[in-house]
Each structure stands twice: as C-alpha cells, then as structure tokens.
Image 1: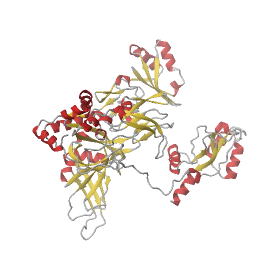
Image 2 (image 1 turned 90 degrees about the horizontal axis):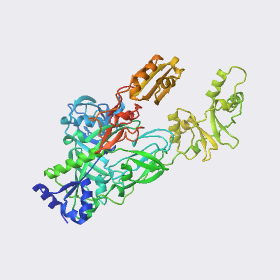
Image 3 (image 1 turned 120 degrees about the vertical axis):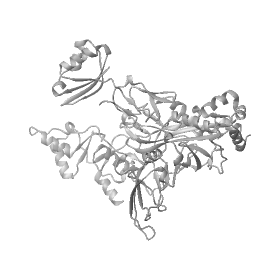
Image 4 (image 1 turned 60 degrees about the vertical axis):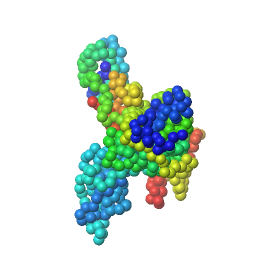
Length: 496
Length: 128
C-alpha cells in the first residue's frame, strides 16, 4: 500500500518507477500483481481519438465602447455566447457558415494553438452599459484573457463498434461504412485506454491531473452519457499551454467536423489491485458491433467482440471475414504515454489525489419524447397494379385516382416494382405506334421501401437520399400495405 | 504497371482490350471501368515487361494511354495514424507497422476511395 504522497515524493526525488500501460501488462505477467505493485509506482495510459464533445471557453476582453455579444463568430464559426458579455464557448463540431463542413470549431481551435490569428465578429442589441452593436477584429490566442478547453465527454472507456448491413454506403461519425457488412470500424484504444486501467475508478476521479493535448489538465467529473463500463470523463485544461501535435481538427466526410483529442492519465499503483487492473488485456475488454444500417437509436447488435479481435484487423460476421478499421490512433496514444512517462520521470508532472469519486453505477437514459411518429400513422392506401397492365390503362388510373405512384405486385400482393406518372409520360412520349407497352416494360424493379413501424424521419431521409417522392410500405414478406408520399410527410411536418 | 486508358465514342465500340491482349499475347486485368456512350475510361494492369507493346496497340486504336506510376500519396505531416483507411481500401494498401499506418503503394489501384474517407485529408491521388 502506497499513498499518492509517497509516490509524489519519489517523483520529486527522481526515483519513481514509471511504465506505460503496454509495459505494465508484461511486468504483471512476469512478476505477478503483488510484486509488480511493489516495483512500479505509476502506469501511464493514453488515448487519441475523435472526441466530438469538446470545445473551448474563451474570454476576449472588453472592447471600447464595450459590447455584450449576442452572437459571435470566429472565422465564421459560431460560438455560444449566451453567457457574460465577452465570454463564449466554441464547440469543435460547429461548422463554418461560409465554408460548410470543411471547416469548423476544431479548425479554429487548432489555428489558435498554432499561433495564428482568427477573425472575431460579434453582434449585439446594445444596452446602456454595453452600447456597441457590432465588432470585427482579429485575435490570436495570446490576446485572449482565458482560453480553457473544457470537454464534456472525453476518453470513452470503450465504444460500440460499427458495421452496415444495408445496401448503401453510409457516411457516419464512425467513418465510412461500406454496404453489406463491407467493413467494421471501432473507437478507443482498449487495454491502454485510461479508464480500462482503472475500471472501478479508484484513482481517477474529480481533480485527477491529466495530460490534455500537451498541457496539464484535470478531470472535473464524469463525462456526459457516462455509463460504465462505457465510462467517460469531463476534462479541462489551459489551451494556451497546449501543443498542436496532440490535437487535430478532422472532417468525417458526410458527417462533419470533429477533433482528435490526445489524453494521457497516470495511474498510481497504490496497491496490488491497481497492478492487477493495469494488467488488463484487450481479450478481456469486450464491446458490441452495431448495425448502423438501421437508422434508429437502438441499433441491432450484430455480435459481441473483444478489442483483441478488433485490433487484429479482421472479425467474422455471418461466416465471412470482414476487415476492421480503428478510429483512434494507437501511434499517438503511445506517443502520449511515453511523453507523460518522461514528464513524470523528470519530476515535471506530479500526481493528485482525487477529491471526489466518479460514479460507477449509472446508466444513460434515452430522450424523453412525446411520441415517435411512425409511417403507419401517415401512410395511405396504395393503388397496386399487375406487371401485365397496359400503360394506357395505367394512365387512366393515374388520372381517375389522382395518384403519382403505383406499386406493382404479383398475384400474392408481393411488391415487384413501381411505376410513376413520370414513367408513363415517358412511355407515351417514346411510343412509336398505338401500343404503349405494359407495366413490366417500364417499371422500376429496385424499389426503395419502408415499414409501418419505421419513424417518419427515417422514411423522409430515404426519400431525400434517393431523390424520390414516395415509398411503398411493406410487411416482412414484402406484401404491400400502403404508400407514404413526401406530401403526406410535409403535411405532418407543417403541423409540428 | 497500371495504365489509365481514355477513349472516345468511336473506340467505345471496339473490343480494344481483347485486341491488345491477343496482339501482344499479354494478360490484361481490368481494375476499374467506366464506359459510357460518349467516352470510356479504364484502368488496367499489365505485366511490366509488356507495357510498351500494349501501349502501342492501344495508341494505334486512338486510345489515350497514361502510365499510373504515381500511386496514392500519404502526407505524414497530416496523418494521425488512426487507420480508418485500412478497411476501406479494396486491395489492402494500408497496414499497421509499429503502431503507424504505412501505405504499400505498389498495390494501389487508383480507385480513390480512401482519399474521400481520410478525416485529416492526408491522402491524395496525383492524377484522376
């Protein structure tokens, strides 16, 4: 049993034994936990991943005449300023109003850390105490009174891996997911990740000093959506002391801007338990692969998987070998562990005793919603036709029933195609004689469909992605139950 | 060696690959094909020693030939070695070595998929 104070004394004297989480696994395997706890004082852990829940609190100083900012932009990226006059919070995922998803809060933060100037623009309504209504100026990091990185949710202990069962390529915050289980992506650094080395949060707590993007930062509580063993941390650190090497603005195509944040946490080996915890291996750290092909909150679990399997680069799904991509950088995580180790060995980084615990028994709740609108509440009766119907007959149905979309079904009411008024018009325009042909000649066979219990937002997104204006509603046996059109949906949206 | 072939509507109707293969007695592997009514674009793989002979045949049919000797380029200043590119690449160009992501560029077939997924824009294709 060692106290943090004893460990710090050794650090000050320059004789603390510091190892990386990587090295600790082998030490415990060789010496056993008891002996390892006597030998080792500190284990450094690290992670470097895209952490969307990050940002920076800034104070710009007062202008003359003073302004109480109502809205503020840095390089056209809006920061939240619904607080005091010249305070603002710039989130990493906020996108530029002029450059779109190619540039965002993360890029502004990175530029500031690199010493570049950014354009500050603000507007206000004007008051007796703050008469100014607008300002445009340039600021650099050194001009700010405070620039504090404060990240509500970082350092995810583990995260659900992602794959895609659908026949469409998906662009997500988990990277690009190829169709038909084409690949798997996963986040987190597994056995070297901070919280996995202290899974009961015995040493990491409120007040723990950490390495945050090159600066000394602190854990200030559990992170948002903290849900052990999917634990998270809320952290802060001084942006002015940070090093651009340990952070990186990133754009996930089709999703948006985020930031790779580098975090290192020293784990004091105060006893045998901590030695045992820090010996954890990727084989013991499990998560689930979720199907992002289903655009719902509760995505189906494809299978259980360990970080060892994920890190091997290949996992098996439905008997097929699927290639895996990490989203977190082990290279950078190792750089951070080594850097933190060096700082502690040199006596530049002392450990802290946590002043409060991080909860271990909490669960994340879903959003409380009034209702989830599903397709069955807006769908209308579908007018179905047979593939043998003549085009002239179809044109009559379109006029009589005032519809634009006719699902084509076989004799068991199973969907086999769709014909639109546009297809009919095209067939009429192209026809050389009086025979306009049959439905089966002009119908679209690959039909985008929806289900009665699918939320209307998901159906709307399908129409938007495929640039179509209606979806046949089908059951599990592909039998047509109805039709939902973009008009039905817009009526619903207008009511909201 | 990979060759990029570009041709117009007249050539689209010609069986150029077969002709080049038969005339030079070479195996030609089509890596990527985009052939429409007005023009076509193919990337083919040809044995290094036969490249010149095959090029001559293609050019005799009016096909514009470009040798793809510059494969995907990774800017190591921008790369953070996350590895997102690994599972995206159809021919496994990217792999992990000492925690770093390295690109075995000789395997690259110039599909360009990785260029569009890299979160730090570290990948680029010199042409296409």
